[in-house]
Amino acid sequence: MRAVELAKVAANAEALRLREMASRQSMRAVYGAVAAVFALGVLVLLHVVAYNLMVPNVSPVVASLILLAVDLVIAGACGLKALKSVPGTVESEALAIRKQAVHDMRGSITAVSLAGEALGFAVRPKRSVTVVRPRGTVRLAGEVASRLLRR
Image 1 (cartoon, helix red, strand yellow):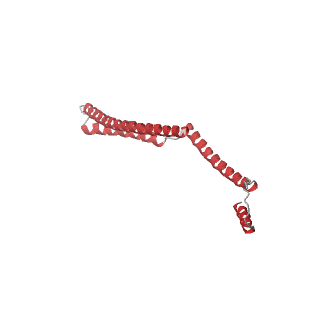
Image 2: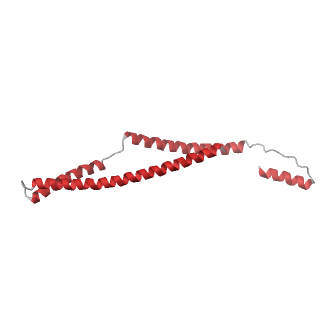
Image 3: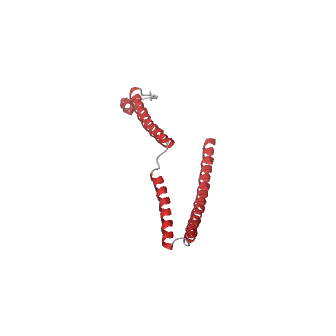
């Protein structure tokens, strides 16, 4: 009984931990979204400052084209980096280990179940026989037949 109570306590503690972790992660997501909005604002203001610094030396159209070219180069470099991201060695090895473990587990389950079936056919546990006082030959024949059919 104590093990059941301890299991309930452990389950309740884990549920509480997961609720608190979800609450914390949701707050992190909200703060991250707010930070992203302000970071976008900083990027826009940085573009305005760069544009205003270039306008006295070049025409407004050329200043806009320079900013556009810089933005395209940065976006292209980041996009290529994202496209060429390949799994690392640790990730690849972990995947291989997981696949091997699942394969071995399936084989083990199949082998155990086949061995259990084979062992069940070869060695049947002896059932305890209760002695019943027969009340007649018909009753005795019925008992014998039912015991044979149960096997």
